[in-house]
Amino acid sequence: MLKKLLLLLHLFLSPSLLFADTVDLFIMGGQSNMQGWRSDAADYPQSGINLDVDIPFYWEAVDYASSKGEWSSLEPQAGHFAKGHFGPEVMFSRQLKLSGLNPAIFKYSFGSSNLRDVWKAPDKGGLYDKMIVQLKRAIDLLEFQGHKVNIRAFVWIQGESDADTDKLAKAYYYNLLNMLNHLRRNIVKDPSLPVLLGVDEQHPRIAIRPAVVAAQKKIAAEDTNINFISMRGLEKSDVTHLTAKGVIAHGERLYNSYLKLTYLPPKLEALWQEK
Image 1 (tube, rainbow, N blue to C red):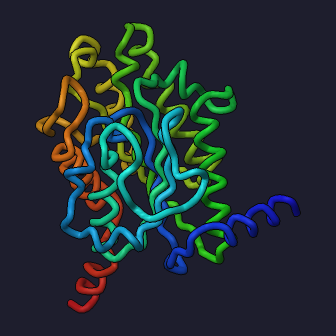
Image 2: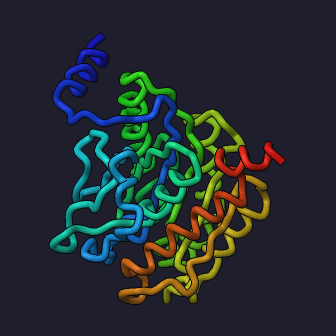
């Protein structure tokens, strides 16, 4: 009862957003390149910006800034630059919207975070558990507003910090697989949930310990519903962080990978059925 009262209060206090009856939820997590650490919102992409108001966005950059436990609309996130910063969610979700989906983006990120010691295994009190708490809240808010929530995919951009030591790198495959299995089976309750994986293959630590990249590729090779997306060739601001241009291109790569992996957009499906 208390939970419902709190959600009702939230709705009265929150700005009104026009969501579709069915929301296609995409969960996005990882470290700094998911966050968009060096992606200056002064270069926020203007083509398609009119779509942003209709793309619900719930985000948290741990220990930095957040949407304060509420759904807003797609936008730059506070911090780093005068106009804020943004991640691959922008071009990813706009392309999803144009394809006929009604995307909502849940994004949870923390820079320089390794999987073993910071995100931790499920039920160990780490960042993963905290992300799940926020995810459940975000879904509750949408459902309380009367929307049906379809969880479409999980996008995970992380791994550079697990190349800090040989021990971390060696354990990465099992740690990542454990997290993905828990999310799919225990949280989403869909063992075949599409998953997109990525890490900066050219990061200096990854070059020394390529086991992290190998782990992501191995997981993708073992599961037809998981794709590894290369980040090679994306423009960088420093040894690891993407520029706004790089982030925009990354979002497009994620969309194209998702499209090839699992999904024929409604607009394309309608054209196909007419043939």
